[in-house]
Image 1 (spheres, rainbow, N blue to C red):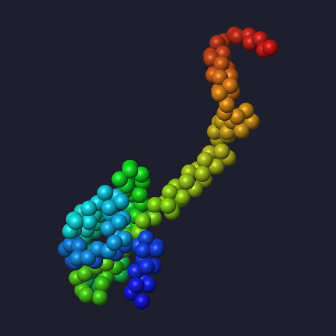
Image 2: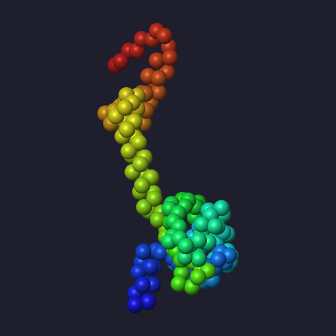
Length: 173
C-alpha cells in the first residue's frame, strides 16, 4: 500500500516534507526535491522558512498545528519563478503528525491550473470591457473586418497622419 500511495503522490505532483517544531527539515521526498529544485531552491537548506518565507509571522499558528491544537494551515498559489524565469505556482498545506512536535508539509505544483485561471480571468475582463466600452469594442471590430496585414497597417497610419491635418483632400484611384 505504501508503494501505491507514493506512486499516487508522484503522479499528482505532491511532495512531502517532514519538519519539527523549530521548522527544521527532518525528511524530504523526491517530488519535493524536484519542485524545490525547479524554483531554484536547494533542498540542502534545513529550515522551512528558508524555502517559504511566507511562514514568517505565522510561526505561532503553525506551532498550534504541530502540537495538535489546530487541524491545518493552507496557502494557495504561492508565486515563484523557475530557473528559466517562468512563473511557478505552489499550494502548500501544513498538517499535524502522529508524533507531537512534528509537522508534515505537503507541497503541490499547480502552475498549469493557476495559469489557466489567469487566462480565464483575463478573458472575462476583456469580455466585460468589450460589453461596456465602445472604444474597446471598436478596436476589435476594425481588426476583425479589415484584418492586420501590412498593407492595412500602412493605410491606417496614413489615415492617422491625414486626420491630424485640419483640411486635407484625398484622391482615391
